[in-house]
Length: 240
Ligand SMILES: *Cc1c(COP(=O)(O)O)cnc(C)c1O
Image (cartoon, rainbow, N blue to C red):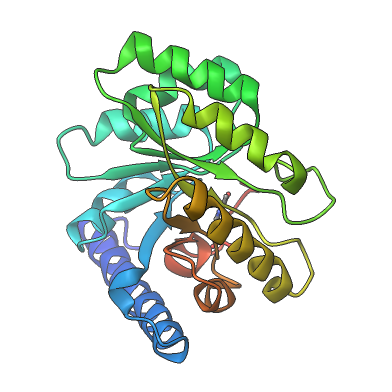
């Protein structure tokens, strides 16, 4: 290393620019293959564990949708970047004691997966915001509980609960493909849930699915938002 922060910053900027171009090309190719147009898919850059300087560079490169999965880190970054045109996506599992913080910076919470969380978020919105919060319901696509999500058979009840809360605007569904399994059948199930949801709530059109490893499969099955971390920013030093 040269120790010259300006030189290091321009190297990092070039690296992020190249990664952005590559990921956008993957999305465009996946859209073409699926008979969709690239503007149907929004890229969310998941910047967890990476410094706020990276977020600043990404925004400067025209990447305005940014995702985080931990409240403390997200709140700090959002505060440091106040005034920049960032749309903050909260994509991680959310504990009820964090809702008062999250509703102050989040533009879209992807991970509502239980009634107690919907209730807590609605209360926090009433206290801290003058407009409703856009949310997605996270659906579990496998048996494992570890990565959050409402079991499919409990989805209709949770949808009714969220729709009944004026503080929340249900915009669609989110899912994470099962670890180590073929993502296609899982994302096909998500597409079925989405089709059902559009019958109940026509404005709930977002499908947040697909990460660095499986965005092509997600786009094939109708993803409107892909959440890409390592493919843009590099390998994470710690688990996140
Ligand atoms: C970290 C994370 C991602 C991005 O994962 P990559 O494999 O690094 O692209 C997407 N979604 C969620 C919920 C995450 O926590």
